[in-house]
Length: 412
Image 1 (cartoon, rainbow, N blue to C red):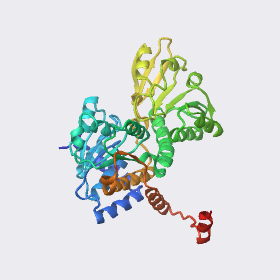
Image 2: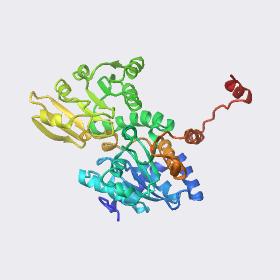
Image 3: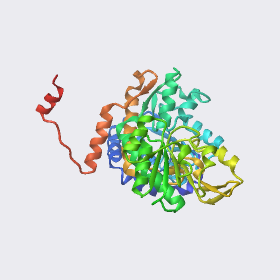
Image 4: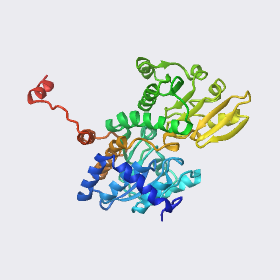
């Protein structure tokens, strides 16, 4: 039995899924091949991921390959109820709705794991945490799985380093065809699309503070620059800080950036990046948002403790009036702004990421039984296959090494 907010939204959700699919030629090609070869036949696959149109297309592709598929969210605010209903109407088990309470959210995760999956796709590590804790018994058939995002990979590597990881996981986030494109161009575009949609204010001529200069932070900073903003980057890594400076951005501490910023965007994967000491220095009207996986980067408890008044200013924006009259504006309750206030990454970008995911799950299905517990890199042939298919879909050609060139590069 599906757990949905409103099954009557299925037609609108199917329209979204079909629109996204029309811009995902690589995944469509894989799905057609899967339909012929049925490589997932007899396997149960559970997905915990941002439940929107591109994700739905991937779930359907796995189903075309013979898998029994169950899907739940990985963030209480990123599920789109119409897409969830549309996906369920096409035969996928769905356990998710937008705005789930913490109790409902965990119940949805547990319901998907109650499928006793052979394979999991995790996004942020909540599936993995449950399978090592309260729902460990639901992993009895598990071969292994994949992890979609930076935060989840960090959690996996910490668990593995402690000797506590019980099954093999492929770090999809670290694949070149994922992080170089999804994290940089996908996050860059979708974060700003969501901020602009939510606020409808000007960016040109204003100051944007980007916390974190990993691949996601690079994308956010680059797009802010393209919109005409002055960009400040804050970092804890000296190498990344130098890179940001050489890319043309100002680099300073959050303490120094706090009174300068008009927009603040955290993209670190850590907690307490913006706290009360920073908020106390911010200008009136500052807009705070988070593009990291969890809602811990902008300290909501600090905002609430400081505020003399809290009220909804418009959809996706909460105002916090300070005792001195200044108003700080928080987008999407500090959750992942590009999905909580927007539609997520462009379909063409997710075409690559989810093609990597599909092939990574196939690799785990075929080889996971021989892999000891641990975190594994994506096999290079998966990156090559996806990139070659994407080039072909884009109508692009590249050169090939001649035999003489190969011999030259391999000589010693």
